[in-house]
Structures are given as C-alpha cells and as structure tokens.
Image (cartoon, rainbow, N blue to C red; front, side, top):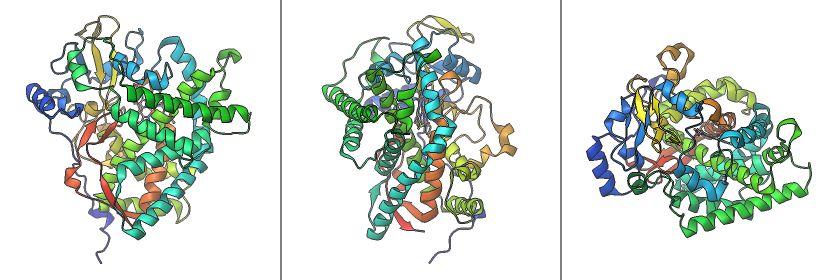
Length: 463
Ligand code: HEM
C-alpha cells in the first residue's frame, strides 16, 4: 500500500480553465460549438483590461473590471443599474419580484426583513440541521464505498445542499415527496431557463421580451405549488417551527409594518431554495473535484482538522478555526465563482470613469474574469489557498475578490454558505478518500452557475 503523501509535499497547481482567444475566434468557436458556454466567449483582453466591450452584439455589452467601477455599478448610488432585463425576465416565473431581482424601495424593505433570517446567530441555530444532512451523506458515501460504486459528484452535491436547505429553511428533508418534487422540477428549470442564451445575448436589443418555454413555466408552477404546501404547513402550525421559513414569515416591515403576503412568501422561499442550494452545490463540486486530485492538500487538511478538533466532533466554533479548509473554499470561489456574471442593465446613458455607456447596455461585472485578472492577481490561474493567509494579504487588490458580490446587494447567505461548506469539506474528506474519473475531461462552463461542462464521476473509499 502507498503511504499518504507528506503534507509538505503539496504545491499549488493549475486546475482547468478555457484558454482565452481573440474576440473573433471566440465568437466563431461559440457559434460552431453552440453549447451555450459563455466562458468561451470571453476574449483574452477581458482578463487584463480595466473596462471594455464584449464581443460583437446588437446591444452594447461591457465588461467592468476596475474595482472602483465594479463597486460603483454594484452599489448603484444613482439607481440606474438594476439587475439585467434578461435575468429578471428569466427568473420572474419562479421568484417574482423577490429580493434577488427587485430594486429600489421594494428591495430595501425585503432586505431589511430577510437579513435577520440569515444572521450569524440564525446560522448557529441551523448548524445541527447541517450536521444531520452531513450524517446522511456520510451514510450514503459509506454504502458507495462498500459497493465500490461510481456516482455523479455534481448530483451528490446538489442533493446534499438541497437537503440542507430543506432542513434549515423548512424543517423537512429531501427524502419527503414534496421536497423531492421541488428538486426535480428545479433541475428542469435550471437546465432549460433562457437566462444566458447565447444567441439572444448577441442578437436581441435591450428589453426584448422572449417568452419562456412551456415546460419551464410548468416546472415553475410545480415548484411554487409545492413551496405553497410547505408554507401552509408552517402557517397552520403557528409558532411551532424554529427555522428560516418561520423567521421570514414572522418578519415585519419598518415600525411593525405588514409582513410578506402569501405570494410574496412563496417568492422569497423560492429565492432561498434557488440561491441557497445551487450556488453551494456548484462551489462544493469544484472544491471536491480539486481536492480529489490533490492528496497532498487533503493530507494538510486532515492534519488541521485533527489539531483543531483534537479528534472530536466538528462544532460550529471549530468551523471558524479551520483556516485551511476555509481558504480552500475561498480559493475555489475565486477560480470557480458559482455566480459567474453579475449582469446589470444601464437604465440611462452614463459614463463609467471615462468610458461611455449607452442606455440599454448590458453592464457585466464578472467575478470569473475579475478573479483571474492579470492586473490584480499574482499567478491568477494557480490554485493556492494560502494566498488568503493574513501574512500574504498585501498581495491582494482590495475589491478584486467578490464571489458573494459587493455593496448593499452582497449575498445575504454568505455566512450560511461559508459555515456549510467548511463543515462539509472537513467532514467528508476527514473520513473518505475521493477519486475522480477522467480528470483530464473536466472543464468549466457558465450556465445558471459555474459548473463542470460534463458530469464529474467519482468514487470513494474509507480513509
Ligand atoms: C457559495 C455559495 C453562494 C454564493 C457564491 C453566493 C453568491 C451570491 C452573489 C454573488 C449574490 C449577489 C448577486 C448580484 O449582486 O447580482 C448573492 C445574492 C444573494 N444570495 Fe447568495 N450565494 C451563495 C449562497 C447563498 C445562500 C446559502 C443563501 C441563502 C440561504 C443565499 C442567499 C442570497 C440572497 C437572498 C441574495 C440576494 C441579496 C440581495 O440582492 O439583497 N446565497 N449571492
């Protein structure tokens, strides 16, 4: 038997990324391949310019990289950069005018009401549910290990994070019929939603209405119906539940103003399901695939876990002290930010620095590009979790790392996601060795989130 590699043997490495091409080559390849992967459209210039146009399209598309301009667009002090028309329209049948897509006073009221439901204290209270989801995952993995079974890493992570959202938001599990139906309909939605359809992006003018396909609308109707059932169970039970849904139901506007209506609650709970599991599943799929290929890094993680927990159960407090585990998660979010693009639309003609922006332009802040920008990162494509150590902080460009967004619209679930990912990485690598099949075939694609273009198949053995 081979000895485990010494922790010190590990060195940073370069995980897969699409080699950027000139704008014309990028466009032709995209049209020929037709797989709708927007990463392939990003020209080499995007990774070193502060701001500039993207490709050839009917509407103006601008990529913004300069951190001060990024902050300006996302903070939007003049109220002229709402979420892009493409995104709002695509998500409307699922989540209506909810916190993820709304703007102005509507968004302000919603944010004030939702923030407490995802506060640090609330995440602490949700931690036992995260642990229970993890227990179940460990049981499943032990069975796979015993049977020598090959399984889809992507699907396993989607199930696991959806189960944790069901437990923490609704006090139910993914094993129930209703939750499973939500998950299945969500998968249909995610695969077919026309949010970033390549041809629309190039051919359509701003604010062009394109009807969603019938089966997408049917999936949304099903999801909303089931969310309504889960909600009614809570409404009927009064104060019996102590979960995130209960906190959102109890939330009141300023000065005790009215809470959310039933329809609004379904919208907001839809956001919890959408934003709360798909993003984490994307990040964890990448983190697990990377770690599976880097046994030397896993050896370092295990040494840290044993030192922090002294061989005991991983608690909420421990998650804050597992520095390397957190830094692996941070570095994964840098190289594979789940939300690849943060698109806004310019509602009025304006300037960004000296760059003229036309009314109707699509203004793209792209964490994917910003996190690999040559001007802001040393060895941008290298996976090196230690770049987040305090002693190397001076290497970082403030505002160039935004996996959770920046400004007032920063992710409301960032604390939830960080604690969840730290726990899952630490526990599932502590007890299992992971191997991915055909690692050379793994390549990233930008869909609803950043995902491997093909499913990653893997196996586990007991560590
Ligand atoms: C690794 C996991 C996650 C990542 C990378 C992520 C990333 C983001 C980003 C980039 C935004 C801002 C979008 C924009 O400005 O256009 C956002 C917003 C949001 N996220 Fe997350 N998210 C994650 C997990 C979660 C979780 C677990 C929840 C809830 C349980 C959540 C709830 C939200 C909500 C409610 C918003 C809307 C905030 C607003 O507009 O005021 N997210 N997320």
